[in-house]
Amino acid sequence: MEHSDVIILGAGAAGLFCAGQAGQRGVRVALLEKADAPGKKILISGGGRCNFTNLGAGPANYLSANPHFAKSALARYTPADFIALVERYGIAWHEKTLGQLFCDGSARQIVDMLLEECPREQVALTCGVDIAAVARGEDGQFTVTASDGRIWRAPALVIATGGPSIPKMGASDFAYRLARQFGLKVAEPRPALVPLTLGGEDVLFRELSGVAAPVRARAGKAEFAEAALFTHKGLSGPAILQVSSYWRHGDPVAISFVPDAATDWLVDAKRDRPRATLRTLLRERLPARLADALTDRLGLDRELGNLSDRDLRRAQGQLADWRFVPNGTEGYAKAEVTAGGIATGELSSRTMEAAKVPGLYAIGEAVDVTGWLGGYNFQWAWASGHACAEALAQARG
Image 1 (spheres, rainbow, N blue to C red):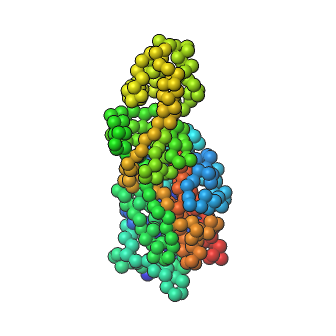
Image 2: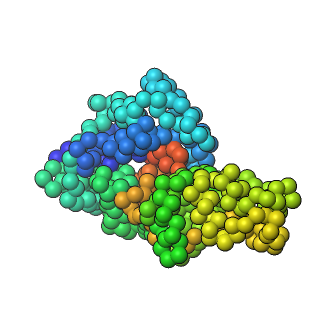
Image 3: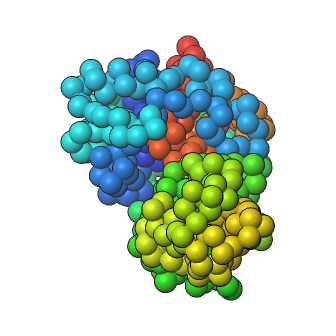
């Protein structure tokens, strides 16, 4: 039986960072990981270069049943703090777009840095741990038993096992099952930052598989101006992944294929270029295959001078607000993260500790805090892990 000050379940971004931060504060950590190596999701992130934070990360960039929950942790550990850490290790980085920061080299550099941040005398990492049982005794001690009989005990336990997105990497709903075991509520989990699938009349757009274009996509009140990609199953690309976190089954997704066009651009074009066709104008703005598909569906393939202003305004309206009704998503297998999770109402926003169960903490993706695409979820992992580590050090005295 191994004794420590805290057992952290999961050696992903949040768990690794929390272990290092706690260890540096004198906390003895048992860091347990189910996979055969730590940080596997980190390694595949950002195309292998790890989009490790976003310069603009703030509470407004996160989806949660309680939009205020993330404020405390995010304020106390900022993108600038993590950038300083990255630079201390001499890791070269660049801003790709929209504040998204990537390693110039490899995501392996981030994993190696996080491991190096864990003091060897304070943090004991054990991989390949298949957890059979977790219990809390009357003495307040947590006991974690592995399927091979190994046992760890500590007065504190941190759930950092993430959500079920990307199951081929070993992801599961373990965090939610464990939370419910201890009486904590779980906000309904669902795939997020995930491609959407199309059926019905919209299935015709699948013929555009591989075509991408800059658009403005909207689901509910959330709106993002980035690229959309048509796939053989439906819609993907950054703009679609972003709105997928806000989309609910049965709701439409609205896309503006002319996000920068003036309000009356077709009517104006009719005055200036009456011999031009709608197909010609759309091909000037969009990939030819997409322009042709939209023109065919609008049924207005004639010279603008032969079209009424009313028809042109109808076309303007539809091109600026084209409604798709997805029939689903590509699920956890293709979801970058999981929305929902351990309810924030169960946790302290300052310490990440469960109010009902002293000594039990939850951080990272396991919690009902979901960031936008572009480094925001990593920043939540660092911020929540840091907040938890501070609390663990204070609790240890």
